[in-house]
Structures are given as structure tokens and as C-alpha cells.
Image (tube, rainbow, N blue to C red; front, top):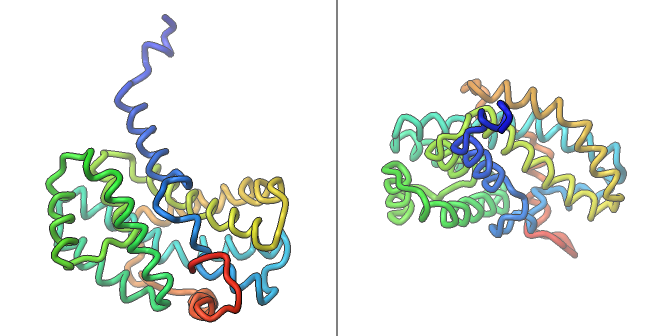
Length: 239
């Protein structure tokens, strides 16, 4: 047996596997049914080629998710590590108020509840049990970024790796939907993803300690398109 094989840590590898599963875009929670307002942008021809799709995803990453969903993943991770249910309840109220578009708000807590259902039964954790009790009592709604951060924390995953996986999942989701909507080739989508890895890394670094004064700062164009999506004549996606 080589020295490198001897150094392999099964527990670490298992956690890596859990992180991969947690961030898997194919998880049966319905994420592929939501475009986050992207469908409206495409129908209005604001996004119409690879360059405009890349620009849109980059903007979401640096100006939206960084101060919204990504920040809430980070804060939920820290609160869960500290077994602080009160902080999670407060974060749930804050993120709910920040998601002004109904479709974005509803899609987030539906995804979160489904994600929790998949993993909670396999986790023995007081904070998860308390969060489930709060969910049953309707003290929280179970928004996806909060559940993602909660589960990652109780699985004892690395925080930076958790944030990278979360952003990667979000970027892949938008690119995949954009490729279908524009439409673009699968190769074009992969090229966009490759070009955004550095931006993902910068978002991870900035999200380790979110700037609370910028928490829930929004990109108005996305919120408006998400609201307009409810009344599109034809729709492929639920949001």
C-alpha cells in the first residue's frame, strides 16, 4: 500500500460524498423546475446568446446571491454550528421578507423543505430536530439556503467547501436552464461554467463573513422579471 493510500481518511471522504450529494443538481427536490426569473429575461430578449447569459449569471453571483442566498447559507451554517435555533428563526424571517417576488419566495421554501426531508432522517442532531419542530409549528418556513447551511453544519462539512458547492449548484442551475431557453449548445454552457469558476471562488471568500449591512441587497431587475413571470403567456418553468 502506497503512502498516499495510507493517508486517505475514510471519514473525510464520506463527508466529501455528502457534500456532493447535498449540492447535486439532480436531487429530487424540484430545482430544475425553476428559472428564478431567467425565463422572462429570455422572452424579453435581454438574454439571447452565450455572452448575455454569462453576464446574467455573473451578475446574479456577484450582486444578488452574494448578499442574499449565499450570505444566508453562511449565517445559517454558523448559527447551526452554535446550536442557535433563535438565530435560525430570525434568519428565516429575514430571508422571507427579502424575497419580494412570490414565485421566488415559494420556490425557496418548497426546495428547502424537500431537501430537509431527504437528509434529516439520517442525521442525529438536536438542532435539526429543533428546526423540524419549529417548521411543524410554522415558526419557520424552511427556506432552501437556511436548510442547506444547517445540514452542512451538522454534517461537519467545511464551510468554504459548503459555500463553493452552493454557488456551483446555483450557477449550474441557471446555465442549464439558459442553455434550454435561449437555446445554446451544451458545449457553450460548459464554457460559461469554466469561465465563472474564479467568480465563484471570489464569492466564497466574500461570503465567509457576510457584510450584514448589505444583507438582502437586491437586484431589482431580477425581482421585477420574477414578478412578470407569473403572467407570461407561455412558461416552461415554475418561476
